[in-house]
Image (cartoon, rainbow, N blue to C red; front, side, top):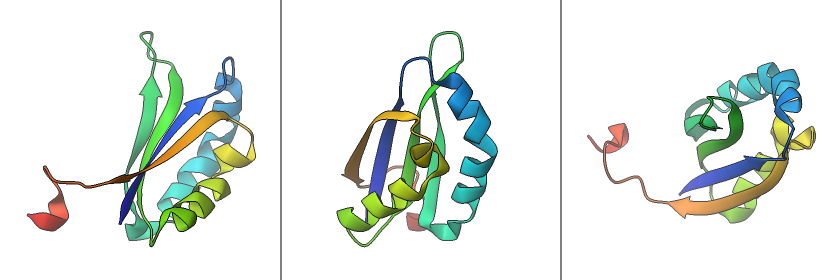
Length: 96
């Protein structure tokens, strides 16, 4: 099943994000095919303010465990992380 991780940064935490970005990207790349999509949320000025990460996991507990291993989570970047099951219907390359 796919899970959307909807992550909101703590206010004023842009430097924490920047300091941990390389490790975060390496973590995501290391997920291989388990990672379906990822990218930052932006404010009106183009500054990163959160993340959307779509992963494949057996269940919510596994998705939660994966999210906890993200270097951003370990650095305390996020104010909140919402984990929601997601059904990729439109433009899913695996269903083409």
